[in-house]
Image 1 (cartoon, rainbow, N blue to C red):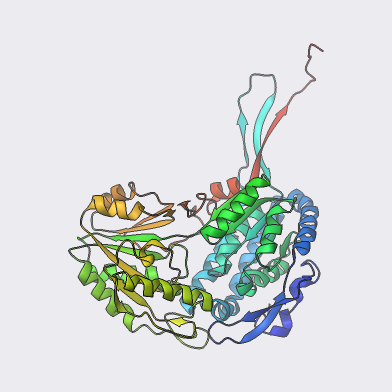
Image 2 (image 1 turned 180 degrees about the vertical axis):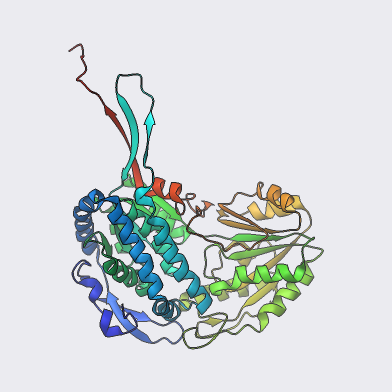
Length: 486
């Protein structure tokens, strides 16, 4: 693919199968350095309309192709991703600030999504139904048609492919709108991968753009399903617009996920688990551990150990250095994170470490004794900040954990795993991890949140994917024409 060579990919997205991008170009910017390292085409709403029409035309032949052909393309896409892992990891570091281990995880999971999706074309797709008439009655799943995918900046490969791969495997065409800040690793990359994998022209198209392009994608008549991953605020708008146009919208939104630490744990081990949940990828993960709810008997020890673990973590440019944390995506996100930290300290939280930044590099931050009214407790942070709040009883912590509009992921650390499971049953959450932190994702598992975190599990595993990207069709067959009274 030679994506690291600007001249090899610049503008290729907007030729042949990939629309013309009549809105100019976006700069591809490294957050770590501020350098412009390339450009990608900028789509317009008019481009979306043309792409959706083109996708609808191409989709019919793709859906009619032998299922082995669709499976072969998805397998080949996984192989291409693995073969170019070093190059992709480099782009993830440059464009998103991902450190090498997190880049490795993204490439591995992205390829796994393709391999898992390659089994969907041969998956059973219907059932025989009882009928009171002399006929054969059955239900079958048929492709939805054109699927619009709107993907975010933070984990761009995984959060795009988990909709792209199953949608394509099940016979749909896909139009992808990546975040313009990660238009290479979240967009151009997939255009090149599926082109190399042998996907027919027009079946998959990429259109980097802003809110106007997203709105055009939701409203384009050929697009029947929208898979959106992003903020709750934007998701509400997408869901409302899709509803007005009678389209299904699968919404994977924000989170304010709690890690509950019960008093019977090994505190040092628990603090390590909590540190990873908060500080992986600078906290820019929807299911990041955003609230550490720790029993009052160990809260001070836990906070001290957590502070010691992260105070000296190296922060820097992950493309050129061995670091634990890279940069935040842009100045707007940095300023928002810093505002949450400073206002929370003013509101009574104790700053144990961090709370400072250079450029887009924000130091890992631990806040102790965080009041439940503090912004860092109430809001999704999306940055490297660990708020610690003590609790006294199981009843209190259950109330604290569910006392938010979000319901994405939940972690509970305890030696009594059954008690942990019982506690989890009292807290609405799409994902629950007993004796682990909140950031977990596998291609074989359903993924999604409840409440303000989304519309439930719509990605991962064959059942969720089939339900997400197909329609149910009832079919009957008679051997002879029936007789009617007129």
